[in-house]
Each structure stands twice: as structure tokens, then as C-alpha cells.
Length: 354
Image (cartoon, rainbow, N blue to C red; front, top):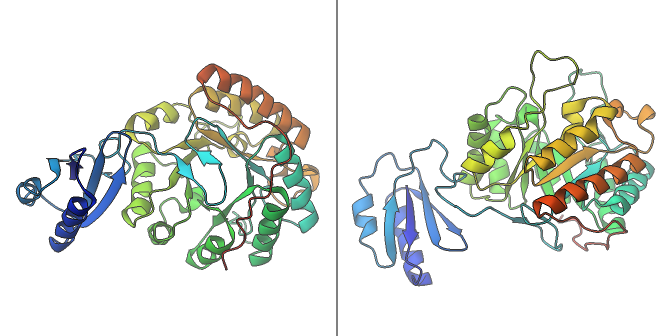
């Protein structure tokens, strides 16, 4: 259920409606759009409270939401969500295409600083890199942990890039929240509901990757878990799904982009690196994703990919990344989207919130 308020409703009236929703044992979710102020309601099993809520001052109408996902639905918020970041003018979901780039894993300070400088000059606003790595083999490199987060935070201060990094469990999420600007929930954890709920209790934006065999509805329901806890800054990510095909690591589902845009107000990115699995296929998949309407890209870049501790085969060299951004810029212009000009970003000054 959602409540649409009158355009001239007062703050006091809105607070009164939220209070009444809580008194009824439900949870209010105030959402502000460009044309109306709505209050989503979760926890209600029927419409028995609709009549009394509809009579409250300032209420325009009470609307039933029939989809299993409520808060992520365009019924709740027709306008596209634009995710913003403290201390930066970077956005995800606005007119500017978001470009996130960096290595699969944090391996050393020198490695991260070299990549950060290169991708910043190449046009990225976000630095990606894993400090915690959920690997298929227990004997593979598992990441540097908190030390890796410290390196990523230092690179942010040096190069002005916002940090995006993965949390793999509730313990690592607490650390990621302290150091990063955006919390990534990986494909393997898309339906780790305890982790999703904890991410929803943070106030850091969350990048939610589609599971290896997840449907669009399952992806949206996973986002609903996060938003139901009060965190409305969620970005979806298509990274390829497992199919019978063997010519790529995963099969990039380009069709999910317009399908998601129709159903949800949340931004969606494309990860062409994990879809491709091989360097020569990354750029064509990236361009296809942007052309299909994605709000940006998250791409793996490494200065010495042959020696990378993980995913070197699908990592672009810095010059390949810069050339790709130039091509993305051309497609973006056709679609009315922009990219920041290549160059050295200014430090964000966001710091580590420890």
C-alpha cells in the first residue's frame, strides 16, 4: 500500500500520517519525487487500514500495490532514483553515466595507486577493488581484508575517486561501511537475506549484483530487502548469468536493462568484465550495455593483468579502458547522457568514517 499526499500537504500532516502508520503496526517509508510526496507502507497484510488513513488531513489517496516488491516499484516512485554521495558531485542514475573501474582484488598499495591514477585520468569517478574475495576455491587468494580497505581509502584521498568494494558477510560489511563510499553485494550473496538486511540498515549506497541464475523479479526482491530496512540508495548491476554458452564466462542479459527500467526506479549498471571473462570481449559488451540504457559500467582494470591475483584475463589495460570510455562517450551523446572529461580528479575529502 502507498499513500499519495496532496501537493500542499504540510510537514506536520506528513509526520502525523507516518505516526499513525506506526501505531497500526506497519512501517512507513517516506519517498520524495519531483511531482508528489508519497509514503510507502510495508508490513500490512490487507487494506483494512486504508479507509482511516485516507481520511487523514493532507492525504490525496491510498493506493494498493499488487507487485510482490513495493519500494523498488515505479508504482511507488515514478521518477528515476538518482543516488548521490557525501562529499562528491558524482551520481548514479542521473544524466551522467557512472564509470567504476579498478582491479578485481586489492593486491598492494603500489598496484592500487597505479590503477587509481590511470582510471581517474581515463574518466572514472569510482575506484572498484575487492578487499574481501569470495572465491570458488578455498585455496585461491581471499583478499587483504581491512588492510586492503585502508589502501583503497588512501587512494580515494590521493586521487579523488569514490570507493566501491564488496562485503561478503556481516562482519566484513561493518568494515566496508567504515571505509567505502559504496557497499557492493556480489552475485553469490544476492539472496543472503541477513546480509541484505544489514546493508539496508547502513546509510551508504549499495551496489547489488544479479545472482548467477536469478530472474529479474528475484533481483528486485533482493533490492526490496535492502530498502525495507530504510536504505533507499540501491543500484542494480547486471553481470551476466550462467547459461549453456561457453564462448563467454557468463551470458550478458542486455534485455534486463529495459525490462528493469520499466518496472523499477532504481539505476542499473552493467559489469561487462564478469560477463565476458576475456579481455577482447569486454569493450563490445560494455558498449552494448550503455546502448541498451544502462546508467553506467563497472569494469576491471589492471596495469599488469598477467600477474593479477584474480581475474587478470578479463581485466583491461589502462589504455584500453581510456579508449573504451571515449567510445562510451560517443554512445552517451546519442542518448543524451554525459561523462566527465578525462583528467585527474580532485580529492573528495570524504575520509574514513571510523
